[in-house]
Image 1 (cartoon, rainbow, N blue to C red):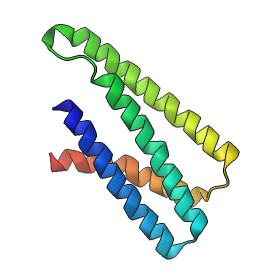
Image 2: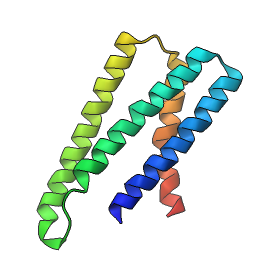
Image 3: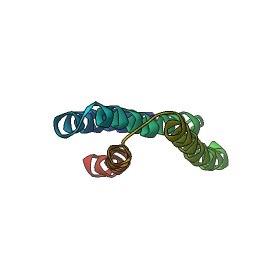
Length: 117
């Protein structure tokens, strides 16, 4: 069940990325679209890493291992997010407004998933 939650979250985030890319294409230029795509990648890859690490173990006997994996997964998610942002802002010219608005909307999309379930 937990893997399905991560899959649903990634699908929902993909839909939000597509929506934000369309909005950026309509109201801004090519650089805004590119920035929105990079922001989506910067959100989705850490979510995928979190899902892979956090849900490796199952069962009641592995409760301590599960908690340890959740802490590791959250730390890895933060580290991957920071590395991606440093790399993106260091190597690519992006529109900061489009990037951070898209990043924020996609991060908040996980709250939408809570209400869907």
